[in-house]
Image (cartoon, rainbow, N blue to C red; front, side):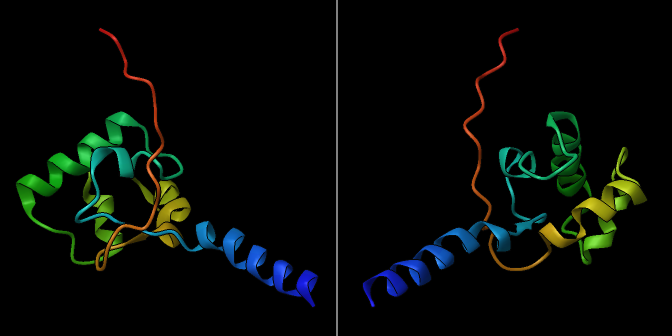
Length: 98
């Protein structure tokens, strides 16, 4: 019985990251960088676009950002949202020295 309970707990613990979503209206640049295909430049472009034009109404509106097209959206669609909170964990990336 204990083994079964342990297995169930582990399945839930491992399934958590699968359902992570990034709210493109509230996410920081670091949170946006956790998305597949989004590096520092695209993440900054998203934040800048949002500051200039206001919040995105639909996830597909992300294509209005320079550098994000249909191929990138195909990768991102399941991982982004325009409502709710961001549940993705940010990675601790080393600072870039200039």
